[in-house]
Image 1 (cartoon, protein in one colour):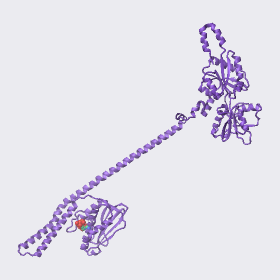
Image 2: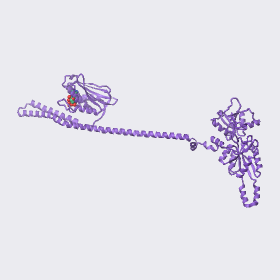
Image 3: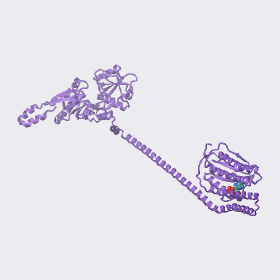
Image 4: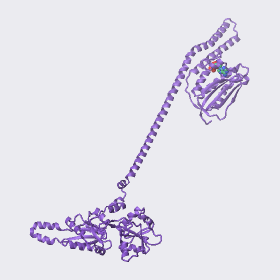
Length: 595
Ligand code: ADP
């Protein structure tokens, strides 16, 4: 520790007289901390020549050596209890980062001064047995002895090489710490407690030279080509040797004179001091292993992870963003499409509603239009029964007036009047039934059943006319959606027409056949008669309103039937049968496949 500032102050205050006293007091203490990795004694022994040289060159200072472990050196440096530090490259780099050391000189091997100051490395040795490992990667699964996990040349240097060879400490069967001195590593190999041992480079040569190890006892694993002839065998790249460094607080003047002295020191024990070397490769080692000043890299903080893996993270982020964008886009498209479909369906339903309403209104208009046209026909139609009634009434009146009331004649006349009145009533009923608008009620309808029920209504009339009606109904017909009253009206109309066509004919006995079938998605009902058939003229106008060949016909039946069937989405058509007679057939679309 330098204590010159108080002295200088003292000099300034007391003037030249005091300078004399200050001159005597310049013999200040200079403390040099030395890493004692093999014990204080060994450290003192190693650096005694350096200390002796400094004492000789700078007699005004009292140099003192403090052998310390790494933690002790750091504590002393923080407390400014030392002026200089001599330590291994690894500890130097750590202290440089933590305490702010500045290197002044680096040790070099005196054998080749100036060739290379990089002499610190690791040598991995194994017992020279048959099939021993020769490559570092072969250490996977083996027991490895090291002096300490904290040692630089004793472990960290080779750790970096193992990592480069793809072997992590976890891949070793055991990483055995033997403790100092390093000879215990050799001993554990001899004892069979480890398969391989890590020595700092040159130690093997020193041990062989000292006769403690036989030259053929151990083999070197992963040996590298020597950087220069005569260099020690090494399994690793080499790093600069130990530096001597000053603290930030050390006087620059003192630092300068100590550095100048060191560079003039004659080699001792084969080693000398040279200009400070570049320790960036030591930094690279720490960074690689994520230890020491770079230990924070091992703790996977989000920021650290992001810094280290940013290219992958960028790719992953882009991929995730793209996926999110894609998912959102698909979702939006699906929703838009669904909304469009819903709108389209609603639109179609609305259009269908409007169309249905229009159709109903049109039907109503056409019925009313027909009614207008009918007015004259009605007048004409009603004229006949009314004229007949008037005739009957006149005849009866004449008979009564003659004073010879013929009761038989009067009864016949009254019956005639009643008959004609009935006929007029029927005409009016038919017209009213046609004009009256009824709400269409669609239901699932079994047409076979409807045919049977309608025939019950019609049977009496058919029998009265001596025309048999037979049924040929298809089994398990699917149902249709229809208004049963309207379809019944259609069927009754067709039956009535068939009956009318056969009433006077000679083939009455052949009767009327009603049949059902499923054809082309339609359930069809056919009414076949053996009547007069259709002449080409009749066939051409069959479905026209007011077309009739019957004296009392209205000519509206088939026209209305076709309107009803078509309003159900079906068809009605007529066909002359080759054997005579006609088949009137209508089909309605299947509503569901279930019968
Ligand atoms: P109407 O029965 O009041 O005459 P329709 O429209 O029911 O009115 O029939 C029109 C005409 O079609 C009938 O007058 C008749 O000439 C002819 N017609 C209908 N059905 C048959 C049938 N089964 N056989 C022959 N002609 C028929």
